[in-house]
Image (tube, rainbow, N blue to C red):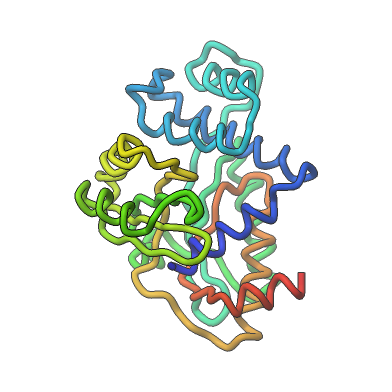
Length: 251
């Protein structure tokens, strides 16, 4: 299983408590609002459908979802105007980062990211400087408790998935960006319950570094993820099970 996905999946599990749920809902609402600018029709707007599905999986109240859609379509004007921005950065030891931000103030968001990176020995990068090390791919997960790997593999492969992998908790499907909706629909039509479906920045090659250094970078990634404007952080750090276990013990 790819390191960035393993990391983000475990982080979502750790964020399931009520103290953090409000922050999760805020991020999901921003994502829905931005997606709804193209169209408020969930059936016609695949990006909106994905965002709403994620919100429902997180048990976000229906009225919150509807309000976020109306903000995006312009029916409601009771909130700040957010824009999506993709930033690139370096963590120490040459680890590449892709930072997805949804903000109403670019200067604030950039200042906060620079502060955290600089404090840890990293830096912001020019557009394209690290982006070539990633591909924008479709990413789908299904609980290994609810489905057979072989059954999922057959349906996903037939629908055009690039890769299917699994560990004891998750079945993970990677697709080309443009094939995500095709594979999602095929899996749903086959009766599988999808836990999450989204577009991810997947590293072409994951990088291994010394354990102590990797743990420090994982701490930096966690700090970046906690910024109010941050939607997602992707890296080419190889986050192994052993590293994740160590990080959880220390944090």
